[in-house]
Image (cartoon, rainbow, N blue to C red):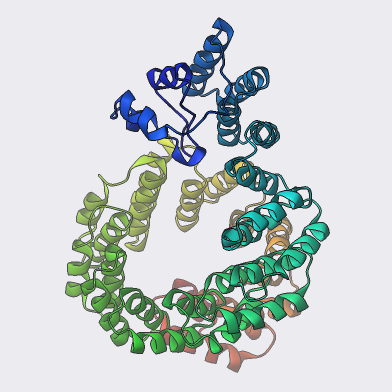
Amino acid sequence: MKPLNRPLSLLLVLLLSACTSLKTPTQVKTAATAAEQSADEDTTAVAEDNSNLPRVELTPQIVYGVLASEIAAQRGAAASSAVTYLDLARQTRDPRLAQRAAEFALFTGQLKEAANALELWMTLDPTSQIPREQLFITMLRAGKLAESQPLVEDLLKREPQRARDVFVQLARLTARQDDKQAAYTLVKRLASQYPDLPEARFAVIAVAAEVNDDATIQQEFDRLAKVAPKWDLPVAWQTDRLRHIRLGQAIDFLQQELARRPDAGLELRMAYPRLLVGAKRFPEARVAFEALLKQNPDNPDLLYATGLLAYQLRDLDVADQRLSAALQQKHPEADFIRFSLGQIAEERQDKAAARQWYETVASGQQYLPAQARLAALDAEAGKLDQALQRLAPLGQGEQEKVQVAMQQADLARHAKRYDLSYRILSQALESWPRSPELLYDRALVSDQLGNLGDAERDLKALLKEKPDDTQALNALGYTLTNRSNRHQEALGYIERALKADPENPMIQDSMGWVLYKLGRTEAALKYLQRSYAALPDSEVAAHLGEVMWKLGRKQEAVSLWQQALGKDPDNEALQDALKRFHQP
């Protein structure tokens, strides 16, 4: 609802005139709008035949009550204004004051006061339909549909042409009803008088959903498919409802409805592949989006969706083509598209094209990621100082500043400038000493510097802030496993992490490695095999190969190391394993 601010001069004109009335809720203007019009225009606009209105003597109590209420409302205390107006309406028996009380009560969400004011308004002005309609909606919002039965029946009887609006309101507010079974019974009975009215069928669907009557829901959708095959709202509503229950069920339902609704709107048809994306059924989603694109070849949303899916499925040529076309069609996510095209160019090893795309990203949400990629390209070209300088002035607020520091430290770490990386993170921690991200990253750098004490200090400081952080628990356990003989203590940290996230392959690797250090080789093998199956990482391969070697499976170990080395020839963990076991 809009603020109910009226200029005091206009209110006094209304009160002092015996032939004017207060505006209905849908006609209320803000003070800014009303101030642009003269009092004469306003009073003329609202003038009606109000011969049945009481002639109220403007006592000081009434004038003061009105003025105080309006001033209070303008200062944010409209709730008290509703109470005052309702009291004045009861004293004067003036429906205009009851209406104003209802307006303020509805505006402030006081449903009980609003109902009282509307009932009084109905009593004082029995010919007006407005308070009846407002009371009906108010009772729906208050969860009292069953109690509003006389009102809705009277409304449908007096104005049958309003049935569509009434049933839409019923559908929209059924979830608020306290007695859901009573609401279900009432709506079904009312809707039975309108068998071919789509809005009535939708209202039945909504109340049936509240009592889990799936059979009725299906019957009503069968009927809607015949009487309103082009009305997408109920299908979209049910799809969204099922999506929050079980995604697969929502996908099946929408697929069924689209099959019998060939003229469904594009937005509803696009919802189907979007659900498939949510279920990570990317190939199916791509097929569905491609079919829609064939019918709408210049649609920017479809070009964008098919481009991103092609990228997800590593079809870089199609991804580049579709995203470029979406950009030409002025898709609103222009900077994200430019950033994505830069990433595609990087994967194609076209660094020059990647730079061009990143440099076209304007200031906004994608600007910092684009500058980070440009800095990474600088560092890869051996220009670490230039990369760090590019990032130095960036970032707005703590979160972005922390991200910039982490990116700078990461570039230094990849250049094997561990001392510089440590200094960057330490400088950032002077400003944000409790940042979990900075503490974690500095612990990793400390580990690479061989400084167990500093790494342990930072990880324990992080865990003091976030005791159940699985990443920190795993990192501390893994660091103690690698850098000390405190393997039993390390096992405790890793067990806590694995209990919280049992399918995490990195934690499985840590568990296998600490068990191996504790001499439990067979148990270690199982964890490392599970980890490598989910994440064929070079460091995991180094660990798994070593365990295989100790178990006498030397040929398998060498084969695994060589295979991993072919993909990642510079990996230090692999090189260390080969060196220790005298393998070329």
